[in-house]
Length: 140
Image (cartoon, rainbow, N blue to C red; front, side, top):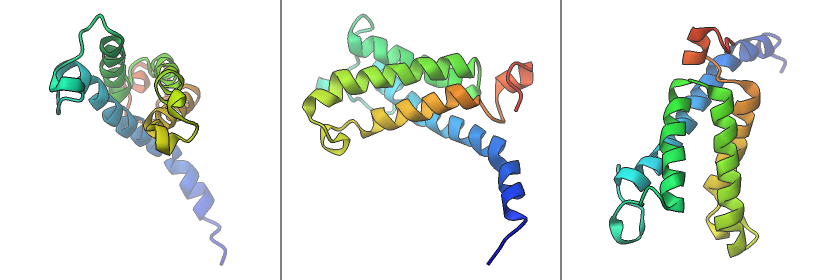
């Protein structure tokens, strides 16, 4: 069965869905940073505490928390998404890949997925519902 009106309708939703992807990915990502820095919504560090800010985990947490917050509201979306993509690529190859080849076994699936979602957002832009769009810097 042919749906001739489906493709144009789907294309019209693309900027909205891109904005939703950005918001949801940033919200999920932001939690990794706040968990490392503030133990919110719960502690993830060994021993249940928070990461010292001058440590590798602390720096990663700061990038994740503040970068995730900027991406959530869509401010400086392209450069922030590119930075976060790079951070996740480094996290994957530094922390997960040495544990084995398969991401499902080395616990690297979230890092790999975030790296590629953020790389896509760096190229595609923030979509709708962004402060960049309101500023006229990246209007869809």
